[in-house]
Each structure stands twice: as structure tokens, then as C-alpha cells.
Image 1 (cartoon, one colour):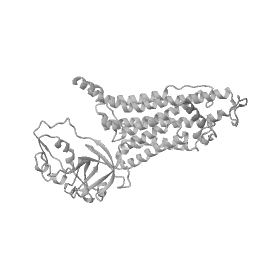
Image 2: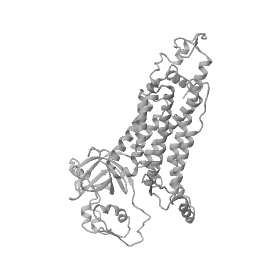
Image 3: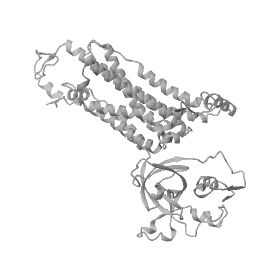
Image 4: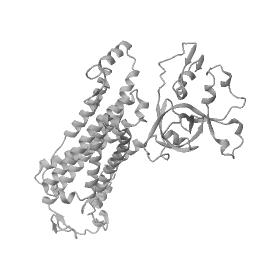
Length: 507
């Protein structure tokens, strides 16, 4: 930004007050226009608190403390924004870099021994992922513990370093302790904001890091718990320090009536309740209540943080960017699609979603099916190819004839063993049109699946992919593959059947 533009922005937002606090009068003219009216050197001296209604001089006793306050605040803002970016970016990049280490051509014995000593064993005891402390937490592996330690150390260090003081200071006259304390509170609030996108990213079932690393979903869930502890502690300390400061000044009553204050209180309370309300015993015993409560508290946290910043600073310092990034992470790859539902037989439904590809299993939301918008269900992907009915390809005006059918027919293929040399799998004389899409088989039971049976199309949100297929369990060396599965259970073995080069049968 050009120096003139910076000066004009400062003139408009800060010269006569604070625009974000609604006590900044709109300037009647720009800084450049005002300068053109200065015909001679001013002689009138203006003092702090006096109205500026003529061209005046500002004495050093007022100018230097004000300059120091503004300069120190802006320097601190620039520094802590950098700290926040380091926390966010390293939390995203380090898992990718560590995963790439597996491609270094090291001797297999060396890798195995290293993993056996430093990565896979539990941090203590003989079993990792074991619930401890009355099932509140679980034992991490040593590899997980190393990254957890990094997250804790970097947040503690960035919360405690480089707090200077510049006096005289018009914001904190003769109060170095109060100055540093408020810088600390602001730092903690910003780092808490920087951790929120990581918290949402690690918790997501469609976490992009699941695609880019070899880390498991359970590992990211464990990291998410520790990020949440850090985030909650930072938010609580941020609020507590400001509360103590205004109580000590005798300004708490007036300050607490401002909109930014009570939205900050709402956000802090919501995120602090999220922690104890998400412990394993509560989730197990009251999962539906936990899920609804969790969604409400997350919405209150995100909304409260955004409005807290808006009513305090509007958009002057860019704090809202952290919240926007958090919302973007949450919304990533949650696409609203229209699913076609068709009966397979009296017990099963087929759910087809065109235009998407996935493997393994996916979580489906049906937001228009019930009032429980947060409810989701896991289903295994049967096929990633949807085929139109070849007999109706020429009839483009009939909506019923344009219905998409799955490329794999459950009812037909359960009537006899599935074989690669079976004539039923030979291509038809007229190849059907095919398009990318997902097919799921749903067994109709009580609850959501029974409501689904009454629809032929419905809006759906999808989280995927969670691949259960393990290519390391190769069966290619065996001439015959026999899989025994029942009902929807066939979807778990289809990848092995389709990937087998010789005779494969499904019973």
C-alpha cells in the first residue's frame, strides 16, 4: 500500500477517534484536501481532550505518548499475526512432511526398528488407545505424543515471548505491567483463533490431511482433543485477564454492557462447555444429546467469536479472517447433492448420487428428512459408476426413463455366485451410458432408514472417502477367491472381488 493511502486510511479511521467504537465522526474532507487549506504555520496549541476545530499544533507531551501507544500496538499485532500463521500452517504442513518420510529409501530393518521404538509403542503401559482417567482420555503412541508435545510447546512459547513496553504511553500511562498484561491477553485470544481452523480440520471426517498423509482418522481425533484443550485454555485466559483489568479500573459495569463484551462471554462459555461435554462417558451414554449439544455449542462459539471481533474492531485488524477460515474448513467438501432412491427388494434400498467418486465408506446427511439436521450415517460404497437404462437412451423427454440405475445389481447378483467368467458379467450388445456416481445399499430398519423408503429423491450431504480396502492384503497370487458375506455385507468384499484377476465367487 502506498504511503499516501496509509495516511488517508489513518486519517479516516483514527485521527479523531475510533471508527470501530462508533465515536469516529466521518471526516468532512480527505487529508490531502485539508493540507491544501494550510496557508501558514499554525500557532494554536491543542491539548488532549480539546476539540479539533481549527489547524493546530500538538505538543510533544501529547504526541509522543500517543505515538508510542499506536506504534507498540501495531508492532504487537504484526508479530502475533505471524505467530498465529506459524501455529496454523505448521499444524497443517508438518503431518504432510512427516508422511513423506516413508518414501525415503532407507533399509527396511532400520525403518522397522525406528518405528518399533519411537512411533508405534504407547507412551506408557503396554497398550495405546487405552482409556485412562475414568475414560476421559486415552494413551497416545510415542509418535502421537511427540506431535502433541510440539503443539503444546509452540503455543506456550508464542504465548510467553516478546512482550515489550514503551513509555510514556497514552493507553497505559505509567503502567508497564498493565500494558504487558493486555498484550498477553490479546496474544492468547489470537492464538486461540488460530487454533480453531486446526481444531475443525482435525475433527472432520473428510479431513484433507487424511488424503495427503498416512495418518489415521483416530490419530487426528486424538490431536483434535489436545488442540481443543489448548484452545479452551487460551480463550479462558484471554477473557479472565480482560475481566480482571476492567474490574481493577472500575469500568466493568459500563464495558460489560457493550455488544462485543457479551458476545465474547457467549463464545468463551460455549467453547469452555464443549470440553467437559465431549468426554467419552458422556458420548457413550447420551450420544444423540451429545451430538445436538455439540452442534449448538460450536455454532455459538463461531458466531460469538465473529461478532465479538466485529463489534470491537469491525474489520480494522483482520481478526475475522481466522473465523472465516474456520468456516471454510468446516464447509470444505460438504456438497449438497440430490440422491435418487430406488427399491432393490423388499428389504434393501439403493441410494444413487451422481457426479461424485469415492471408495470405502462415506457418511451421509439427509437434512430434509428429519429435524435432526446434524444426524449422519455411515454407508459402504457399492459402485462408483452409474449406468442409464440402455433401452431408454433415446427417450429424453420421459423423466422416469432417465432415472439412473446402479451398475451393480444386488438382487440379481445375490441369486447366484459372483464369478469373473460368468456370462451375466459380459457386456450387453448395446453398451449403456455410464457416468461417475456413487451407489449405496441401505437396509431398511426403524428410524432414519424407514423414513428414507418413502422418498424417491432427496437432498444429501456427503463426507468421504474412508477407504477400508487394504491393497497390502493382496490375493492376486491365489487362483481362486471365495468370499462369504450376507446382505449389505457384500459391499465390504467387492473391492477384493473386482481386483482379483482370476476366478472370484461371492456367496
